[in-house]
Image 1 (cartoon, rainbow, N blue to C red):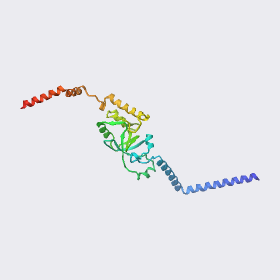
Image 2 (cartoon, rainbow, N blue to C red; image 1 turned 180 degrees about the vertical axis):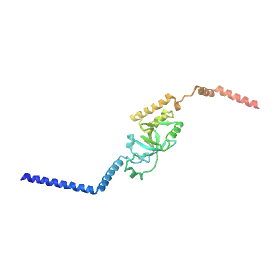
Image 3 (cartoon, rainbow, N blue to C red; image 1 turned 90 degrees about the horizontal axis):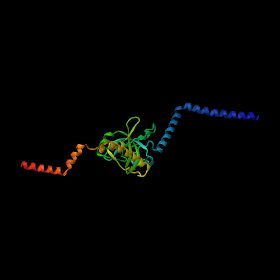
Image 4 (spheres, helix red, strand yellow; image 1 turned 45 degrees about the vertical axis):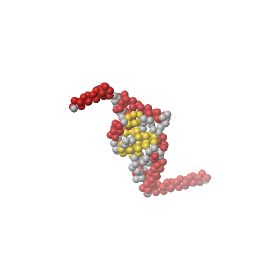
Length: 251
């Protein structure tokens, strides 16, 4: 008798559990659209909370809006070139696109540009001309954040030149002899990152020097002789005498 009572009680509990499952399943079937909408809403809300917490889809309108941890970890962000100025680049930040989430935030985002400098590079006048031709708006670029100085970002700027390869503009300028290496602003000169980046840039500059590219281009023998003669004091004096004799003769 005790065993039969226990079995009957267990069967009743199983029936109640099955009834609950049946009711839930029936409700889900009859309200499938509602259930899907609730699930989608919860998923979007979850992604939105996570994205906002890590600033994944936030559009930065100025260097001061970028979190300090982004600079410290040298995070790369995407941007669109707006113009090349006498100081550097004006770049509009383009945040990562997340379906369903990004459209909700687009209306609140401004179209401001950030002042971007080529970290560790001092351009020649020819270098600025080359940069203006190579990075024409609306060229997409990647900015590896190195430091933030006042209202400027010092970055390694990369451009996609194919599906597999990116070209670092900082290195390319030095490789062509269109600039010189300069101190990396905002970094400790004794830090590991400073030494690593500076060594990398110096290597590109050395290639240009070895090949005689740009500012490292050697003058030909004829050009050097012509320059030496024009600078010679005796030749200058002789030219003045000839001009004087020519004027006397004309009189």
